[in-house]
Length: 233
Length: 233
Image (cartoon, rainbow over all chains, first blue to last red):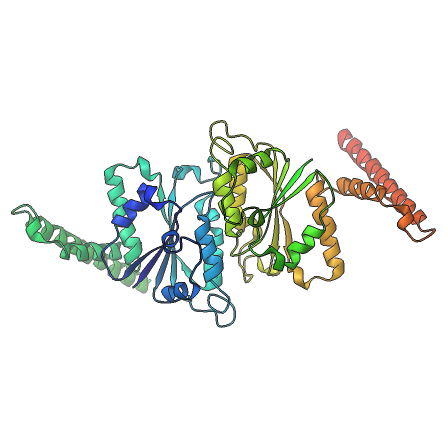
């Protein structure tokens, strides 16, 4: 699966959260990082190149700070220019069909304010309606958004947890299932250079692996049992 | 009441609907027409001037074509630049409090598609959530949007009806009440130069005026009667 991260931020060097996410990017040829403001400083978008880029990827991510409940202007400009009739919608316009659309939103206010009665008063599900409508029109499958609230108040541990979830959001096919997360962790463990670990500690990794695999077997057995029980009813 | 129409359109000379609305503008010192792309062709917004302009008006209108379920990028840029902390929200940020926010949206698809099961699939009430949230945050009173669907398919009569409703949306305090519309029509009639009418036809105007005033008296009597009846229950 190939993932295209379309980032929009007018002043990205000053953004701690965007820098953190950028440094967290897995070193993989399956991931393309594409910052619009840097690519097109004069705002002149190369439409053909953007459309070719979209077609080469399976998961499209819009990553931006939520300013006034929407994206910075550059991403809106990109939408208006790149998603043309006969490409993204209309006659013959099915070039995005079946791909996925994810949102990575960096949000300054706390999560609890985004509900009725909260200071912001509207849910992120309501505020992102324009993107849902755009996904519907272009036949993109809309993924559960990846929301980062108040990055600057996070502890180092919280940030690390965000980082792992972010990598999974970019790379795992069904990123929200336990099974996929297990597989991802086992994959990551394979890449660890055991010589870099403190002497005699690599057995801990083996043990973790064993526990994950045992858990998975047990869960699979339970599921099989439940399915059989369901079948005999 | 002073009204500021903030128009965003990247190519306004080519837009039949925007030209039609512009020509329909009442010749009144209470109305300011402000096209962002023309005012700031290089995108450099004069924040102080914009904030001063906002403070001089009571009703703020955002007028734009609905592209990808939102405004053109220039209006988004304007929001991000002009609605600063301590001006529009936050400590001391009550400069817009009590003013009104209206949307005049020009929409290419038919109204019936903007519902569940329709081609667009989402209502305009849902799609405009970001503007509602922005109004809440800045303490603007959000008005019922003024929606123009498929302008290019309208007959001349339909366009004229839109034009009158548009002028009322700009100028009348409670633009959606019958009482206010009556008062507006009577006002407009006062400005007609009777010498411009065909000879002997000005009595028709007098008759229309009389009918409107009689109707209003009758409606007021009915309302008084209903209120008394309600009181005696």
